[in-house]
Length: 278
Image (cartoon, rainbow, N blue to C red; front, side, top):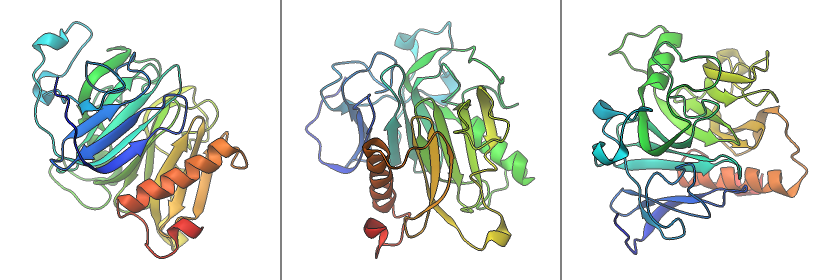
């Protein structure tokens, strides 16, 4: 385990009970620290309170319920964007790397890591592991995005690339680079997945209630999530749509909106001029 006094060029903090942080160092590596790591949400071993370098499992040797993490191979990953969140009973983290892949670690009890199968997993509890203790690359999301867009395995455009992600209490959002399609997975009984049927648990699906159509004449700048709430921001930082149990008048949710705007602006997803004044 490497512990370094590293200067961070980008940091994301959980504004919920996990009180964890994830950051990108000047070397483009990922560092994590926080209150707890009992479900692997920091993606590494060692003392939770000390910023330490996270571990990324070789996709060719992904962890399973029978695998031993000690024989897992780890690889170097250059991070572009980082996310963390969850509740005191859960918590997970995500990284978008320089090749556009999405990585996850932490609690997967409700499929919030999306690590099911290329056929979109099972619409119920996860069956592989209840949590991951190092970052796992999720290829299923990109496969599903290509399938929904009618693209082949080697075809890419803005509908099949990832622009942004968001971590809720027990769910995850992913925004395509076309700035219209939002995908969701994890726990959804409160409507936080943006799916009209409000499934208790869902594998990767198009969140129609959060997505936009071409005819809407606008673009989604970023996606945001907190506990049982999901919402999208336009390129100026104003809320476009929301779904789930959203109490935006409370301090928790006001802070979540502020932090999401700040994170999106750091990631160059919002227009600079007025994003902090919305």
